[in-house]
Image 1 (spheres, rainbow, N blue to C red):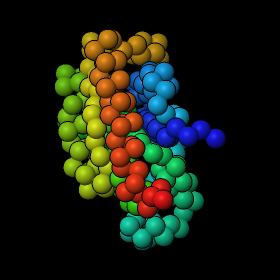
Image 2: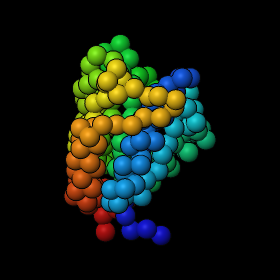
Image 3: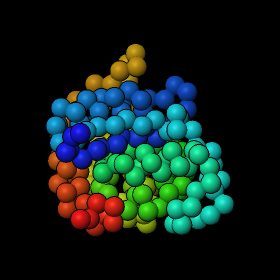
Length: 192
């Protein structure tokens, strides 16, 4: 078993024809080359969470449904996250908010990076809009990569980021690795 922390990269878009899967694969390649993490790719389209349907508040951790228990296990096993998300209507998409809302304790004291993508604003509005939600869950934002699809398109299902995007991604990965170690002691499941 590896001693490296687990970085879970989450594809937030669930719509057919999405660009996020190609962008996430690009980022996963960079994260694997970085070498500081074991990298897991999670697709919210495959996780397939319905709109929040648990009878208890997530803070209780008393889950009834198997889809919630599976999602809880995925998130609990992660040491750090990167959310790859589109910008919809000047904000983040519903699937990432729903996925965040399902859980509470599992998110706490873990670092997160954001890869936003979109049109003219390069996904920056989705990144900015999500930060208060992350703060409420005690997820610690460490940086972001903002991708303008006009200048950096997905072509035939493949995304090839330029040097500027790769530099931003490497800086974010370095921060995720550094902060994961610092926050690790605050997590009750890891502090001993």
